Length: 255
Image (spheres, rainbow, N blue to C red):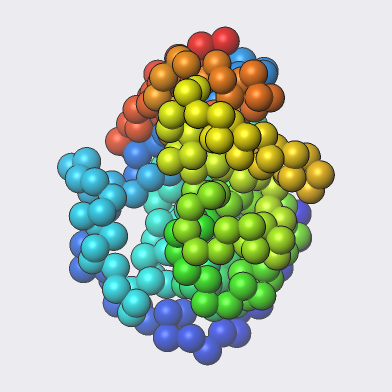
């Protein structure tokens, strides 16, 4: 993999060495591939060191701390994955990132590459996902981030697709490797012809764009059965496991 990066970035985030004024860690939540009967990967979710919810941590991240927090999350997730994940398979690590905190894609990824190299974690197993709920200040800039991450061999994903600011315009501009359908669309899908039609439409678009679909927020057997019948294989939700703090949870594959 080409791990060369440009280190000359004149942003305050790169120059500042001031530590974050709060501690945090990660919990891991599985993404399962029921077509293959395996755990496809784990998403790293921000938590307090005693398991406090993400909102309690994120409320302390103002604009001046976005860059440092984004970098610290990547480092923490990769370090934990290097210790917890099996070395003999291709289990992926999914990391959320803040597009508006990335100043120059090639330079801002340097710390992630160095951390992965230090702990011996294959960067081809890393997926970066960004949420549609974060307003895109510059969509062209985000497209450059996605292009650079793909060039370096990372997997990319849009999280919470179907909720947020950009809708289908975001998909038109940014063709990531995966789309994670928002749980609010999933909820009630078994009894809603409208929701099933929307999901069917998303699947048609995804196939035309060669994008993989993940359904997140799965909580019931009925939701799972409906979505499997629709042709989805990748899932995430409490039905399979709850997030485990600094650990990998026991997963029910329900194949």
